[in-house]
Structures are given as structure tokens and as C-alpha cells.
Image 1 (cartoon, rainbow, N blue to C red):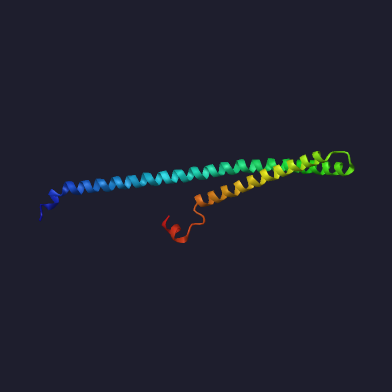
Image 2 (tube, rainbow, N blue to C red):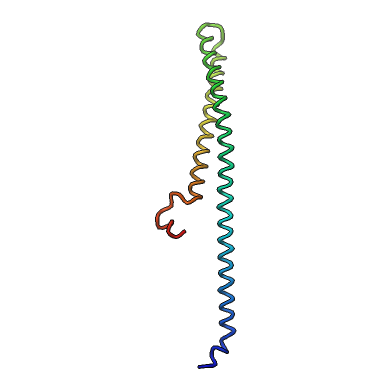
Length: 130
């Protein structure tokens, strides 16, 4: 009937408002997801910077401990130092190698997480939805 839209005007207006609210909620949700992704990327870059610094420091420390181990070995062979000093030098070298490997593993995990945050490695049908 001709008067039906007049009587349903309130329902139509409320439906429009409801749809507008849903759109606003979806937009807010999108903003939150983008902000979270940006924060994750920023954190990954910050972590990368720290890990690179730690790696550099440990590599220098490793060079020093390798030299100390070599000196301890040559002194032990010459009979001018004890086995305990040689073992301590080797133990310190192994500790630093272990720390360096742990930092490198953490760096790789950080890079994987960064790549996933940026969307790399997603299956094609998932990438199409993004």
C-alpha cells in the first residue's frame, strides 16, 4: 500500500542506523588490527636492532676467547700452565658460542614472526581475502 513506507519509516531509519553502527564497529576493528600490526612490526625492528648489537658483541667476545684458548693450549703443551686453566678457557669459549647460537636462533625467530606479521607465507586463498 502507499502508506506502508510511512508507517515503516521508523523501522527503515532504525535499520539504517543499525547498519551505520555496524560499519563504524567494523572500521574501528580494522583500525585496531592495523595499529596492532604496526606495533608488532615496530617491536620486531626494535628487537632486531638489539639482537644485531648483541650478536656483534658476542662475536668480538668469541674472538677474544678463541685467542685465550689458543694461548692456553700452547702454554699447556709447553708445560707452563695447568690443565685446569686450559679447560676453563675452553669452557668460556663454549659458553660464548652457545650464547651466540641462542641469539642467532632468536634473531631467526624474530624475522620469521616479522615475515608472518607482514603476510609472507600465507596460503594464496588467504592472501586474496586480505
